Length: 139
Image (cartoon, rainbow, N blue to C red):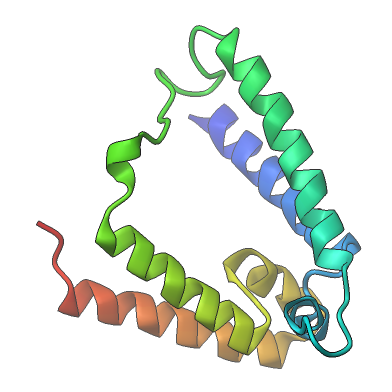
């Protein structure tokens, strides 16, 4: 158990450092990427491209593994996971990301850079998550 916590903490730290190093904790940079017809900033495309390459390598490595290092089995998505609820939630996530310029990972990492703005974003995000739990009970 402790080993898994240490791995999760190390993974989150590396992820947060990568977001900060790539400038993804700056909402203006994210909005610049989404501004296709204005002052477009391609930085996020390079960050996403790097993530896609790492994930492609991870899928290749995963195929040769019997089980994950810190779990009993892999929890991989399947095509039945694509539900209207997931698609609607993804659309809301994208709208919020475009408005705020932050998503959960960069929002937490931004606490170290611009704590007041990040805290407002995170409070609103958590309030939205609680509201969904109260209103939408999945079947």
